[in-house]
Amino acid sequence: MSKVFDLFIIGGGINGAGLARDAAGRGLSVCLADKGEIGGATSSWSTKLIHGGLRYLENYEFKLVRDSLKEREIIYKIAKPISKPIPFIIPYVDKIRPAWLIKMGLFLYDNLGGKTIIPKSNTLDISKKLPNILKKKYKIGFQYFDVQIDDKKLTKLNIKSAKKYKAKVLEYNKVKKAEIDNNEWVIHLQKGEKIKSKILINASGPWINETLKKNIKIKSKNKIRLVKGSHIITKKLYKKDVAFTFQNTDKRIIFVIPYKKKFSLIGTTEVEVKSPENKEISKKEIQYLIRSVNNYLEKQISTKDIVDSYSGIRPLIEDFNQASKVTRDYIFDLNIIKKLPLLSIYGGKLTTYRKLAENVLLDLEKFLPKTKMGPWTHKKNLF
Ligand SMILES: Cc1cc2nc3c(=O)[nH]c(=O)nc-3n(C[C@H](O)[C@H](O)[C@H](O)COP(=O)(O)OP(=O)(O)OC[C@H]3O[C@@H](n4cnc5c(N)ncnc54)[C@H](O)[C@@H]3O)c2cc1C
Image (cartoon, rainbow, N blue to C red; front, side):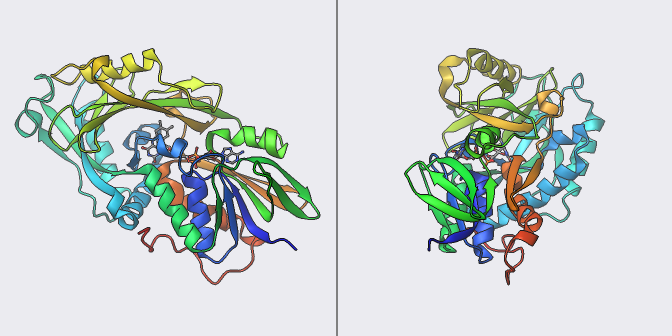
């Protein structure tokens, strides 16, 4: 008789990978399949920050920021070789956000997550500490810290660890169909194999509703909004190892981040799209990013400075707000179909993948065999 897995996970992005690691490490039998490369979709198209999300404070998302800051601390500790804290400077522009508001936000940001080894925020004199980078009119800056990470490596490390705990991982093997037969999920893979499982997890990121509709033949209760975020990469725009958080008059922010020693990463945009398939950056997005940077930098940039670009799709939970105000938090949709669980993961951030995995296993506890091990991934290095 063929093996029946405890969990089958559709999607090897950070959420599927983190869950595979956590579950396999607890002794559960896990199988995961991705239609492409592990970590090759949204989880390698991010801004590559493990962060609390300072700007979410403006949307009163205190719980999301607190949880994310706590996770920032943990991920930095368990993934040190691929992560590092970097300073972010917000140049002060009184017409966009008053100083008291930024200072209050930073005070919360320093303290909401509890004890931390990441440095705290402060105010600095830009002309003295960072001369000749910004236009002369930007004199005061607010400095805070977040963690930069290699997002794709983080995903791959989770998979490597899951495999060490005997998870079966299949790459370039799309889930074509999932159905219930004889009291088990039967998952039909593109390469012909059929896998049996007690529980099915849909962690297909921006393809979530497509997977439900086309491959599992279930109608989704949750509407998502697909929002494209694009980055451009230029040669290093300045020598100092600092990032900038530039405020735009539309209230959005743009990051300029040191990237791979010789480059600067600039992003992001927010453009609603209809399809989860990755799109190219548009001319309009490029112009938006260049304009935002040129409002601040002394040395102006143009399209000629761009050496690369990439775009990713955020699957945001629809709450009929403006895209930048839609929550970056996640929700689970647990369906019981003919007594078998199907759990779909909506939304989320790179930063919260580890806690998300713990919460999935908590929600599925009554369907899973008893394990000796409880939550463990907070204390075990990924290396
Ligand atoms: C522009 C942008 C910037 C971001 N910046 C940050 C940031 O700085 N910090 C942060 O914390 N978060 C950030 N995020 C959010 C973060 O990137 C995502 O929340 C996270 O990567 C989502 O991971 P996932 O596993 O859900 O999705 P994905 O990484 O997209 O993984 C889903 C996987 O499912 C697979 N799949 C789909 N359908 C099937 C099928 N039928 N069969 C098999 N496999 C299938 C896909 O191939 C894919 O690999 C950003 C997002 C975007 C778009």
